[in-house]
Image (cartoon, rainbow, N blue to C red):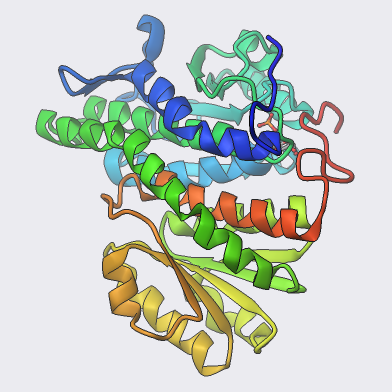
Length: 368
Ligand code: G6P
């Protein structure tokens, strides 16, 4: 398939705007909307009741999708998860358990370190699965179960729609595991699948913050360092936000758990260090808001990304606020990917970098 940019200036922007469709397609592969149930695609099965843990192994953006999934698998399926960066995993002599499931998350299905980690687990005799976008890839061919993401071809080196598709697959799989392990009732399954079905529409709404993001980006483009903070599933989203920014704008950025602020990063805060606080309404909002106030008290420039309620709770502490639609905390990591992608994109555009082909980076890394 030849993919073109259409009316978009960059593939990255086009791919950000494709997310209502790419998430809908991916969720549709796992969720039966009529029955409000979830199942693995193509009649595949994995015996989630028999697994005693899950290893999630990946690189880059895919690794952060795995970090979000850890929260989902543990909360909704009471299944312990260890997340690993593929290049660390097989060299650290991991103490693998025989009844574990190893999930490899990969857009390309060709990343050398992820492939090597897969072969390591196969040799050990583990059941393997891949959350993978390219169905004909080496990793897709070698795993026991192929858990597809239907993002479509992704051209921009900085991953966007592949990331949200990975999250949609992993969220669905967590529901499937939760049912199999009897942690979730039929009613829970119906409620959670219903939340997943709302994602495409909510992303369409979230994309409306494009203009507001553009304005903020003008100011942030002169920053030397940017800190991203979040709690719970927003912690990996903060790390992904920082990765997006450094990949395409070359501004140094770090993603941190908001609660860790006082254990180090707070020393970096001054009026020159913007802090992006990702804080949707959930059981952690108050705590994140209080971290935001700690930043503001040190003259840090806070960009709050939240919903109407969060913006009200934060009152006038932030320098700027980006407002996303209200949503259930289950799906917020998927929805909040959108503002951080748009923010990185418009900061990079403001800086005039080569957004689709950032220096030194490759779309698929097939060497160690
Ligand atoms: C490269 C890409 C990233 C991607 C990572 C893992 O670094 O630039 O966007 O997240 O590889 O790639 P994979 O294809 O395994 O998801």
